[in-house]
Image (cartoon, rainbow, N blue to C red):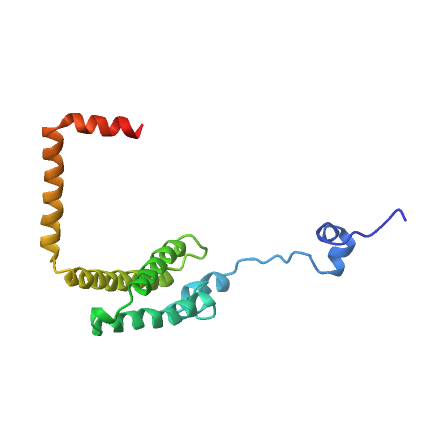
Length: 175
């Protein structure tokens, strides 16, 4: 068989298949009606038909994710002793990772980016609350902790100034 019919994408280029499968191009001409049509669309119609409108998952995923943000925000009413550090750090990490991802994907979904950014903010605020609570259990306030670390730093600097030979010996030992 000298004339074999090819299937697949190369077969669509053959004139016989193009006619049978209706791959012919339709030519459209701009008229005054088609040019004026997009200008008469209302804002809601543009939003409804947009690539991130309510007809797509790009709209409904952020709507559902608001539940996670609101659940995290409702924890502001709970005492810090009842909050989970790992859970709130996970919220913070998830929010930051997916906020970045929302600017990479096409179509760029700013609505989803805003939800993820607020998820990061809620997670960061709750994580800060838990860490401050844990710090208060140790008996030191934040100011006292800063003073303590500053004094340790000053003591290390004074030791280096008084005994520079010890620093050189410790560096040579690590090599």
